[in-house]
Image 1 (cartoon, rainbow over the protein chains, first blue to last red):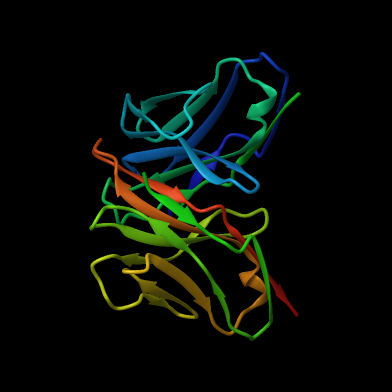
Image 2 (image 1 turned 90 degrees about the horizontal axis):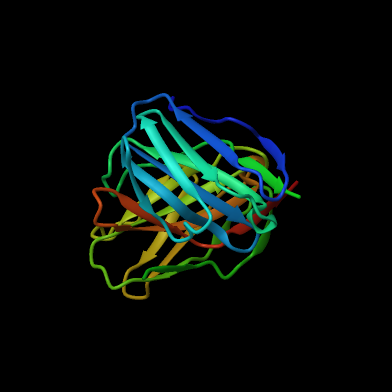
Length: 114
Length: 117
């Protein structure tokens, strides 16, 4: 089975801190994604990556950056955390870029910014 | 831009009964795919079922089936013989080509389904 893991289930940070959320997949998937999930808003795509060192902005990239130095690892970075970034963050991966590919999700990181 | 609308924020169903979750979408594309994903409480999101726009036959996966009406841009999920384990958030999703060698899923806001014993 595909396994997508995220570094933390729960995280509490202070306003202005630099925050790293890490995601690792173990099935040699090409594409990786970071979503933000908020009640009543569903999932919104922040960034995705279709290859090592490649990235593309999603719908809400402001305030975030990403890094993909190795194929299996995709990091989401909050350069200066703000309270409006309190949310659930989900990582996902797909084997290829084909439109029928299943997205495999991690368990999520619930981030609270105080 | 594509949009996905789930008009039922919450629903409930008695165990063993059938329930239908609604989803409508808007797109100008002719080739696309539709998905239903399930997110159980405190557990990872998983794919339930997918439908290719070119296929007229509705997709079925065991107790889960879809009613795909392309002209109406409607994609509802039917769950038969509901079980307690079906309690979850259900997200309808649409995929379009991003032009960057990958694709992007657009999700609806979700429907919280509770199965009542």
